[in-house]
Length: 118
Image 1 (tube, rainbow, N blue to C red):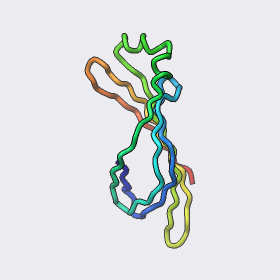
Image 2 (image 1 turned 120 degrees about the horizontal axis):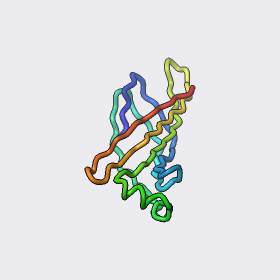
Image 3 (image 1 turned 90 degrees about the horizontal axis):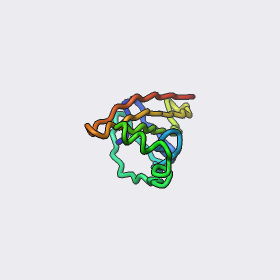
Image 4 (image 1 turned 60 degrees about the horizontal axis):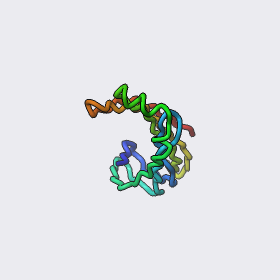
């Protein structure tokens, strides 16, 4: 789901989201280009391509499963074009989330950081 809390709409180019385990990419989600109006929320059906061999052949997986916590990271970078009073502005936004999957309780803890560049 993508929400736009801003008072102007924008166009965004296609991008890719990544799922990482201990720094190695284990999943990819392609994100199509599009437009979103001001204050609009869009829902997308996206497919995660899981590169399971990279996960299962990682030597640290066994110890992480035994400890009960699976450390993951998600990363997405998206390029946006906004037009305000006829002035076009290019913005690059990136978000990275450290995710800890608690296997026994089936809960997730996450800490996210976002950056934007004009």
